Structure formats: C-alpha cells, structure tokens
Length: 220
Image (cartoon, rainbow, N blue to C red; front, top):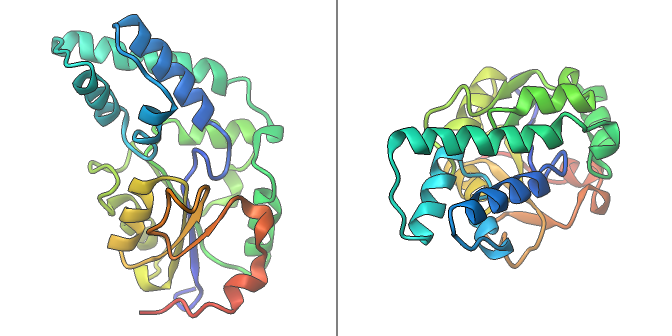
C-alpha cells in the first residue's frame, strides 16, 4: 500500500452538507448572546475547532465570559447541531462523492477522513459511509486545529503512507493551508476565489473523475 496514493477527505462541506447545520447552530448561539453572525463570519469558521470557533465569535462581539459559561455554550451549540445530524440519511451525501469513494476502494487506494469535527463517526454512521474509511482522524484524536497539519499528518501515518503521496479534499481556507503545510496535494471543493491556495479547485465532485488523478504525479 505504501506506493499507492492515499486520499484524505475533510467531512463538513466535502462529503456531506453539514456545513449548513453548523451555520444555523452558531448563528442561533451568537444571536442569544447579542453577536451578529452572518455567512461572512461563518466562512472563517470552516475547518476550525469548536473551541476556536466560539473564541472567534466572542472576540467579534468583544465579549468575555466565564469558563463555565464557555463550556455551557459549546455544549448547547453541539446539541443544536446534533439535532440536525440525527436526521441525516444517505441522501445527505454530496453529489458524486459516493461514486468516487467506490472507485477509490475498487482501485485499493488507502482512504482516510481528516476532520476537525468531534461528531464525525456519528455523521458517517448516519449516512452509511463508515466502512469506506480505513482511518478516521477527527477532533477526538488531535490537539491542534487546522491550519495546523496535525490531522492530515496523522491520517497519512495511520494509512502508512507518506504525506507526499497523499491527496487532501477540503472546502475551507484553513484546511487547504493545512494540506499545503503537510506537503500534500490540495484539492479545493468550492469557490476557487476563496480557495485560491489549493493546487486544484472544483465546485463539486461531479466536475472530475478518477482519470484526473491518474494524470497527476503525486510525489515530492
């Protein structure tokens, strides 16, 4: 397997459309504490841990709260988010993702999840994708948030693959920076103007196929 290119996927906004659930939950929380929260602020939270996200929101509103209140708000936001997650089905997998994963499995490529979400296993189970991944590295296994490359480096390690033979799919600026820092090939999924630092960028998984990656030399 060591010579096979590894494929590492972020979760929110790449495999499933849970980004909208995060936005709704953060917006509800922000409004409760009197802080304006729009799509513009939400863009800055993509790929960022729950702790760092709440810290950013409080900073935007120039608010200081106790540690106890901080923990309470994080738990409240997560429960609001999970209420949406528990209703998810296979229909929530983004277009083209499942077919692409099936091709990678058939070609025997190592596949991992590299996500900041601490709910990744719950989400993968809800949409029936758990068995697609040989390694699941998420917010429960890492201590440093993106753009630190820890999550992707650990995923490559668990797959017994070198970073230079790894491809990362990300929808966030922080995630692209993390992949680039890890010396991995970065594929942006989303707006190329926002994800301008990605090696390649596509709007979604319907815009490319496996043959695209056969043409790319994924080495240092």
